[in-house]
Length: 343
Image: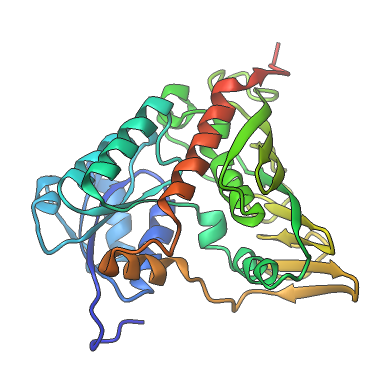
């Protein structure tokens, strides 16, 4: 909530091409930030955004945002292949930026963003929503930090998605625009692997991509998997577009964190055994097994990011972590062996 006695920030939105922009915006609003205006080319996307956030005044061009010295932060969910250029432009105008994942889609773009971030000292934050906006994942962070499962050995992150749960624009099926399944979806799991294992260095051991079931869109990768090795543990990732129509949500996102004294499994969006809602956490340790409803767990990313903007600190997510998670996803995509394509 906003407390008038405390300083806060003004922010604006550039690009509405993924619905993640709603979560990005809400994270800052819930932390007391003020949404000023929005710029996007698509009339329908702006109309929907203004229905949700009527305080967002539409401006005709980016310059109205970039040259407004009272705006400290920009949130953006442009089409992935222009996110790097958008972020660079924003940082060069002296503003911090939070982009949707993937933050960039090539290693060359990552190098350019890192260079400008270092030169300007601005914050480049990728909103890894499967951690930052998921209450069960935040609860797991607290349990792991408290030593509930001992030393973390491995993470297994599963990111299934539903291809037909909403209309997809043409760019979604063009690899040069979305970057590939590992670059895109698996960025979430790379982030969680680094976070829970505490790895500050990591490498891609092996990765696979393929199109098993969608011959009508040959540039779509509907399956991907990655094996990671870090200086704090190992990780396995599987992502796909094969969520069955019978499931009541867009994907049965799961994370298993293996420790030396127990393990945690998250069923982030649905418990297929029948418990209602999402944010389910299962903890198994030396004392027994238990289920935790994490639906009331507070989410610290937004408030911490606001404080980072005000204080020039690095508490919501370190810049090094942000860049390394992105780099792992990009390298997994670039190194992937292609398997199982439709004949």
